[in-house]
Image (cartoon, rainbow, N blue to C red):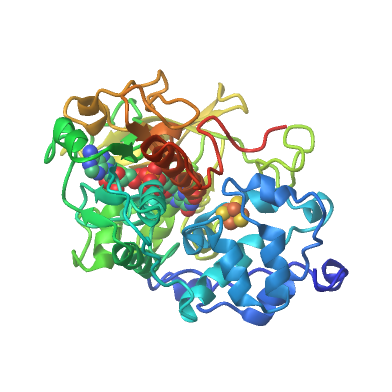
Length: 496
Ligand SMILES: Cc1cc2nc3c(=O)[nH]c(=O)nc-3n(C[C@H](O)[C@H](O)[C@H](O)COP(=O)(O)OP(=O)(O)OC[C@H]3O[C@@H](n4cnc5c(N)ncnc54)[C@H](O)[C@@H]3O)c2cc1C
Ligand code: SF4
């Protein structure tokens, strides 16, 4: 800790965002490019090095936050980079995408604004690349063992990097034409530019990881062939089976799933398409679902030039401050969060005013209505109480010619022909792949990591699980392992 009174001298100041009017005209990241280094060093100096760092506990990766805050405050970026990579394969991903449960657990946050941990993490990660501190780390010798990884999202990539560096021959199978999972076709470029992903993929390839894209396990390669080619398999297929909304009018043209809509916008950014076939340009858009996927739809629709965008949330408007009874420190509290996409839609008046704000809370979708040609025209909403019970009152109607369903995901695809079904792994009642605490499925030598086993979660959990599953596989293949295992399959976020 360079300055024991840093938190008294400096107020919390976050990495600045570009002006709203500027950033909605492009797909670049919302934040001002380039780490504002004096600001980051000053903010790292706010860390109190508090003896028992709950930030470290709250981070699924067990990131050594006080250590790198200290190093950054003393401008020792090389050592900070080493400590950050000791626990996190892809800090530039989490530094941009993580909801930062560490900050909710920061001891300073008991009665003051938390340290800007996530900003410091992103700044170190970016500095690593700028200074060439992330060279490929190929193994010194090969073990002669081979591992097949199914899925190239953050869980699959973290497992692949750990196992390749441990000397195993690793092949990643990906059904999409490009690797990256939801980092590629899901999360919009304005949240994380794709060059961050490309740089890591190049690093993995240089270390020896092989990628087989446009290859779906279950269709292009059977389970038996996969198992005979490899000594172990890691299923990292994500949770791509989306939840439906079985209300009248669901079949109308223009009512579509968020994950049918977002990848098309990603493809425009990749240069594959000139215009998305589902573009929101000139359309009144209603997003059903108040979560992050819905917010990503919001930011995308605004950039595509929608006439209006309204996000409908069945949950009541959360409080702005932590409820100390329901969500005591250091847990991650339910509070009203305003993402950059929300900020844009509100500032630029994208809601259907005067009928609706850009965000509607405590609203349940009753039905969709359409025109004679079967195209959606309106969303009919009822009001619910905090326990989601209907409240008597007038039905609200929102104009809509594009409705995006962002209601979350049940688990991986388990239909006949899917990787899960072909491999014969047991599916738990909640729709995820069943596993023991050490990521092993019921099929010997087959492990599961990330959303496929945990259910819909976060990038930070996917990386942590990928690292831990790699340790389990290494132990299975070699009898022992020195790879780190930050979380068991049964661990979860800090709870009261
Ligand atoms: C729109 C959206 C936005 C999100 N935003 C955030 C965010 O800001 N921050 C955050 O922390 N989390 C976010 N998440 C959640 C986060 O993206 C996931 O938790 C994370 O990507 C899960 O990683 P994974 O590796 O388990 O699976 P995925 O990233 O889903 O990757 C699974 C991969 O497996 C491939 N695959 C599936 N079946 C097969 C098969 N049979 N053969 C070959 N390949 C196969 C898929 O094509 C996919 O590429 C978001 C999720 C969504 C949907
Ligand atoms: S990965 Fe997430 S929880 Fe961990 S230090 Fe980074 S922002 Fe915090």
